[in-house]
Length: 144
Image (cartoon, rainbow, N blue to C red; front, side, top):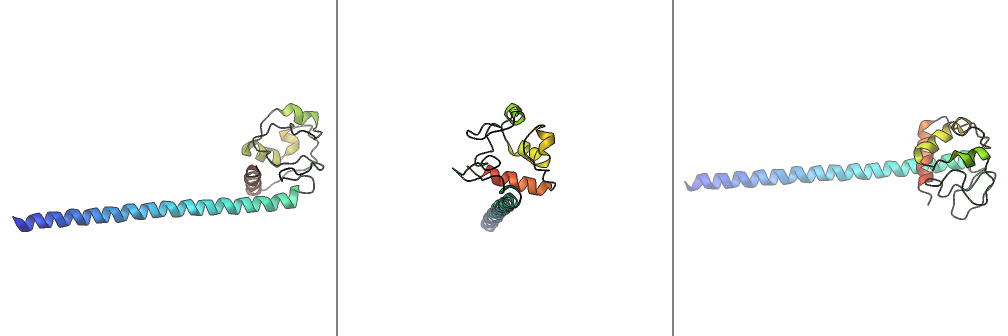
């Protein structure tokens, strides 16, 4: 009887060790996935900043306390009501737009500003690349 009990105990111990290894590996894979996802977001934000510098910085700033130029300062734009930044002279169309900027409606605006807000003063033809719009909206959403 004794050897059978030892065998059962060894089996349970082996099973427990295998389960812990599997659980640990699953946790490690999830952690690596989260790190990779975080790195991808950082890459996208860096891409968004590059797009901003290339396409937007001639008319806009995006730093806290930065000036309005030809367009309003975009610091804190995500979460802000369209046409509401004090000290900037918006078109009546933008003032009447009434939406609060989110990443989604910002991306739609960046694709075709004149279609998204007919009558806007923004003379930009739009950003054709969807990945660049997504990266730009991500970067702008981090400027708070």
